[in-house]
Amino acid sequence: MCRRAHGAGFVTWVGVARDDFTLETGSADLARYRSSAQATRSFCRRCGAGLLFESGHWPGEIHVTLANLDSAAGLEPQAHAYWGSRAGWAVAGASDALPKADPPEHGAQAPGQDDPQSLSS
Image (tube, rainbow, N blue to C red; front, side):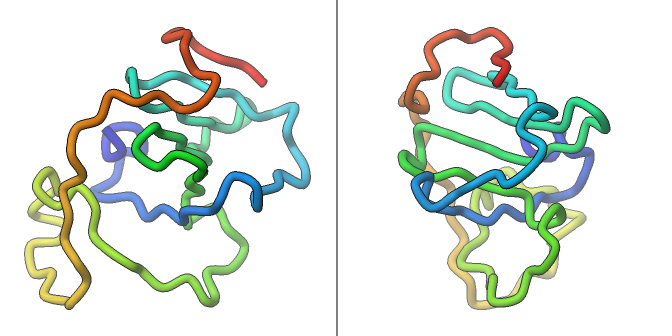
């Protein structure tokens, strides 16, 4: 799903505790879309850039696309998630020592997300 949403071989996310996350500017330009029963994606209404991901699989967290941060200093990868559904051509030679995981399917929904239609903030 992330590859399709971003048009890329893989997407690098930074997970942050929801209570520690603040969107300092641009909240009026943030649109939310329920992309599946488990996930909500947020994007910029002006340019369409994918920005945030929330899922019942990671309760209490919000994930931000690394490419949209001003700096990645101090943000080292912790794991390859959804390894089994990776784009093999993009990471075929991944021989690093990071854990490679396939999170179990989940039915939990992000808090306050019971409408499967588009959401707006």
